[in-house]
Image 1 (cartoon, rainbow, N blue to C red):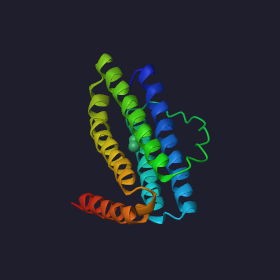
Image 2: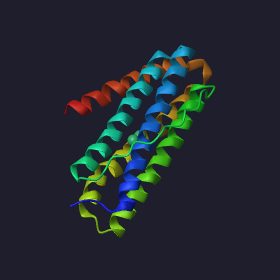
Image 3: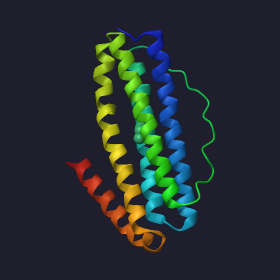
Image 4: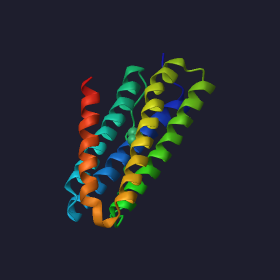
Length: 170
Ligand code: FEO
């Protein structure tokens, strides 16, 4: 059992897309570090690691079904967003783009009657709901805090990370 040529192309593209998210979040983490927002920086470096994990899930799936992995070149991430709010908004946009990419993969799997890939993609469909919500929460938090209270907002981000780590342990 393997996947169609079109699905192989799209799954390989998704490896690059996820690594593109990894690279973008890494750049965001570095920019936040330079701005002095160390907790937000850590939030984005963890988010980057999650994206690398997503890329590896796609890579291992292709290997599992005996379909070739073809790694593409990655474009450089945007160098500067300019503010924590612009970074959070950029991350929300990124998650919405990835959600559409995942849904396109599901649509192709349905067209191909490729049930194993449909089953594999279920985790990503659910994960995107969670990731869009998390970035939307972050945008809202930063908007509410405003520039003057951004350092206090970092305490809430630290709490969110601790809660997420506890959920992962459950
Ligand atoms: Fe892998 Fe955040 O999408």
